[in-house]
Each structure stands twice: as structure tokens, then as C-alpha cells.
Image 1: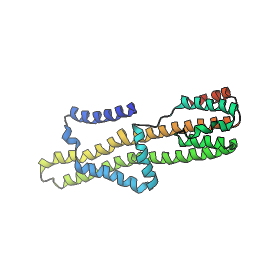
Image 2: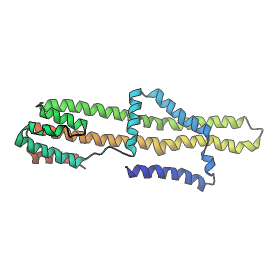
Image 3: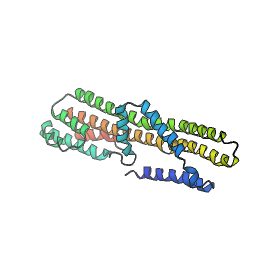
Image 4: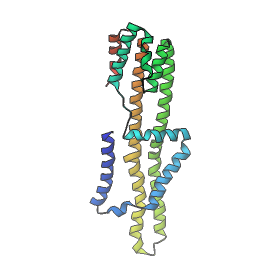
Length: 246
């Protein structure tokens, strides 16, 4: 569980609700079904028009990374690769074959399988880098779905406010409805700006950070497996890969 994300979401809600109460507007001023429909449904509609189906499905999958990001065991991964290099120098590459089925990471499993199969270092690099960049691009595109929602939501909030003011203008003859009507109109603006700046845009940036961290760990895997294929000394491999571990 990512505690910072949980705390951030809670503080964001506290900021909006607490600010409304502190200003004397009350909780009721924060709710408007019409504003919610215009902003949230409109934002989803806009992003659906923009996004290909595979990218949208991937966005739904990686959404959970906000609270449960994938584990990036940098030090553990480095130690494992150094251990493999020592065993490969002693027993040969085939001595690593028993480890393949025990690996949960598909990228690491594929790389180790290619290493055991005797692929040349250049082939290892080309194949694994293509896999890494393809996955990274797909996930970045998925993260940009939420970035796009953060761009559209404020605009939809303005549209909601304008529609609300249009409704107010139709009731100018009844002054008793003007105050509540104007307040309801600006609720849409709050939905749009708050959802963008307190949720959608931070979510997109958080996902991008997780994706970059995972790509960095995959770079460690690539460099480590290539070093093993080249028969490099385990101590040299450890020193070579230290820069990938934070």
C-alpha cells in the first residue's frame, strides 16, 4: 500500500470539504447532481473519444498502482543476478535452467531463458530492449489517459458553470432563486478544477514515476544478463549494476 497516495487523497478531500465549511458555504453547496453529470460524465466521454480501446483497458489495469504500485526489488534483483553470474562461471549457463520456472516476473524469466539457450549478448539486448520499450510506451499511453482527464475536467467545469448561469438568467424575475442558482453553477467549476489538480493529474504523474522505476529495473536485468553472457566477473557485475539501485 502506498501510504503517500492514501494520505494525499484524504488531504485533498479534507482541503475541499474543510475549506467549504471554513468559508461558511456548508457541505450542501458541494453537491450538485447536474454539475457532477456534466463534469464527470463529460470528462469520461471526452477521454473515450480520444483513447483506443486497448489503451483504455490498460489504464484501468494500472489505476491500482496509485495505491498498490508493483514492487521494484532493486537490491534483491542485483544480488540475484550476481549469484547467477557466480553459478554460471562454476556450472555453466545450463546450471541456471532450474531457476527459470520459479521466476514470477515474465521479463526476467524470458531474459534468463534466452541466456540459458545460449543467445548472443547482442541478441539478448535487442530482444529485451524491444520488449521493455514496447511495454513502457503502452503504459505511458495508459497513464496519459488520466492526464487527458485532468486537462478536460476543468473545461467541462466551465461548461457546467455556463449552463448553470444560463439557467439563472432564465429566472431573473425571481430574485429568491438567484443566489442558490449562481452557487450551483460554480459547483461545476469546483468539480472540474479540483478533480483535475487533486486527482487526475497527480495520478498520471504517479503512474509515470512507477513506469520509469520499472523500466530502470528492467535495464538492470538487461545489463546483468548480458554481463553474465559475456562471462564477466561477479564482482565487476555488481559494481557495474550498483548505479541502477537506489
